[in-house]
Image (cartoon, rainbow, N blue to C red; front, side, top):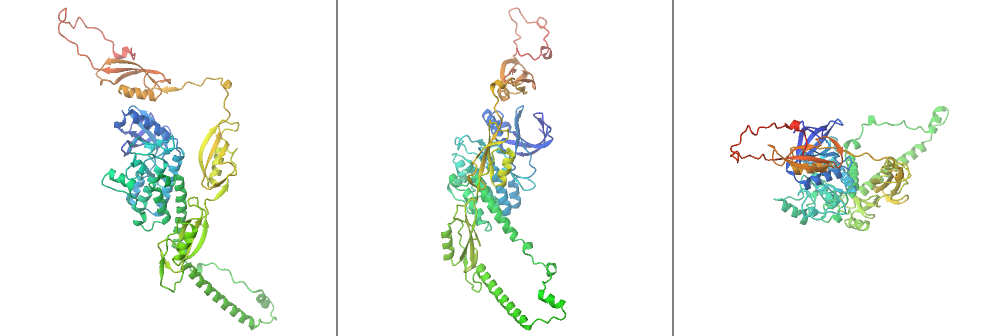
Length: 599
């Protein structure tokens, strides 16, 4: 297989993987001079026409996706009996390999990888595609640490709000959702459930559900609640644990969307980054006194006057006494201030009694305050924007729950003000690229982009949703409608469009059934079928007309000659006695002289 060139373009160089559906090769795209990955279906699927049809349809659907966190699909085709798909080549290992090597991953790193996956899923879900098989094996890691979702090969285009698989279970048993286990309705929330399990495994190096066989594991997805990941690793922040368990909710309606996952993970990533920076010893390192830049002391104007005037009198001693009193008062004030600060921050350090900080994240402000005060802790309230937590509920707390602190310790709770709102800007008249750039700068997301006939310049925005001036939260998806220019009137069509030319595929040596499929897949028709005795395998194509690689119009008939067994003649004497070879010797034209005529 190595060295073979598929479709006259993709030269196979190295086998890099094999799965249940296909083998994967690293190849060189001779047309664009770049490395690509080529997935070739296993031989077992070549005669499954229904599967082949789905394979091509789904690959074309996935090819619509273009996102930095998705492995892009470049091409799909057939070469002889081999059906293949050409994808972006990602130089790196899978996320599963990374977990095997590292075990429990760094919390901030795992959060960033999860956000990459959520970004890719949100893009696919916006285009009505569900992956259905999110697992670490299908996540490729680039050398710079970016995650890319691979293998949309079993993705299904959603034509309605949900879809079913006729009772067939699709996906990998350790990672699929309860609805997949039951063969029920599958939505984008099914991918979110799988992402929750991937996050669980990255942070704990454990799978939430295991068993002796696939059936027992599937039943646990349906019936059992997962062990909280903090039981395996106490350092996992409560906010991160909460979003994992929400994603793994048995009820799809109670799970966050892929977009909600992005928002939550972005907030967690920001908090973790700040915490990591605060824990950096260099950030609080005390510099040697010699390295501290100081300004020369300011000189008293009166002192300057005295030095400049040798006859001036020296200052009276009472000023010196007054400055001593001032300094004493200043020192006492500082001591009192420091003591008050210690009390405010740490409670009563002179007492040994401690209390565990209760968890109030997710509770409303009044209840959170009551819980903390009942624990003999003081409360400080700060408000922050949050698009994932309803207004009035606690987003986070400091110190975290479970930590032992002194009585009367000050606990700061951060209460959600809801999503930060802005006025929807006017994008009409901007080019698509300019509108996209402005949307992203405002912290919004570009959703679907539609086209319509318009008098405006092609490529400019005709309308937007939401409308101008609407109050919207940051992070909201904005849909645009772009002009494709004025529609050409029938009377303006003075020329007939050129007829599409198609390259005739080679079907020689294939079975008649596969030959017919390949021809129809190229937009050609099956013409006359002639059977001819041949030593070639019975039922296979001996020759075709037009010849392979000929350029013909769409719908052209292709005539075939099919092999049938050679008949053995009876050499017994007939009515006129024994047959004589001399009597029957004739000159038979060779195949080359006869030509490729099929009649």
